[in-house]
Amino acid sequence: MDSIDQAETAGTGANRWAFAALIGGNVALSLGAMLVRLADTGPTASAFWRMTIALPLLLIFAWRETGGRMPPRTAVVIATIAGVFFALDLAAWHLGILQTKVANATLFGNCASLLLVLWGIFLTREMPRGWQAGAILLAFAGSALLMGQSYELSPGYLAGDLLSLLAGVLYTFYVILMQRVRGTLAPWTALAIASAVCLPILLGSALALGETVMPQNWTPLILLALTSQIVGQGLMIWSLPRFSPLVIGLTLLIQPAVAALTGWIGFGETLSAIDIFGGLMVGAALVLIRLPSRRAQPI
Image (cartoon, rainbow, N blue to C red):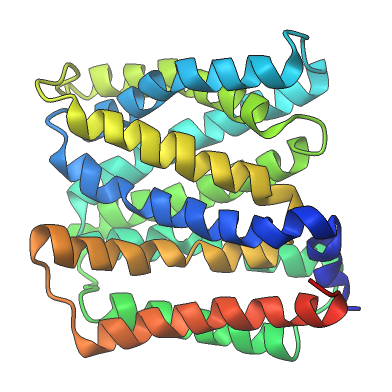
């Protein structure tokens, strides 16, 4: 068996649902951009409310996991650092969207996919081959088709492009740290700690930028907290230790595909045949990336 598959083939029973959870988490996260658009607060403020509204539920779930016992100090420190990276990622991403085209922000923000694939290759010290190599090429080609038509390189977008690129790098560190800490902490506990750390950073950023913090319409923010933080991050953090960084990186590419679909349904944005074909290529890649583990073990 390839060493890249080893993390995926541990825990046979749990992995029957883990891939579906990873997919579902990314689908839920992809709805966030639409809900941020609908919110009547500033972009960083909406990220603050996403965390604030979700945190009480996360703390209840974490309490049930731990029975009220304090988690190990080292694990808390790692989850705290992950939360800092996550808060900075959200701040950079939301600011970047305001200063560049959405397609540019999506393209550069999803550099986390490529970075996680490279991290997986670094950890295993071997290049993907066979179905895995094909899946990687197919996924990135499909994403290029999805974003290539509307992407535009311009000096006027430079600041937004760099902020979006920074967001992708920061998110990569967040995922790597959360994957590491999940060996010690249960999922809700890890997510609750990281989310709590985000609050002062995001609120301070929103106030410093002069954003509107208090909403008039709470519905988009409540939906944002439930879909992105509870369901999206919850499912993703739960599934992290069951997969290699390579697989996690490729599944992140679901987000631009679903975001394009929601933009078409919710905002009337154009969805061409090339966009649809690109989305189908990403879907095919996710099927291919699972073939080695299916061969390696009965399901």
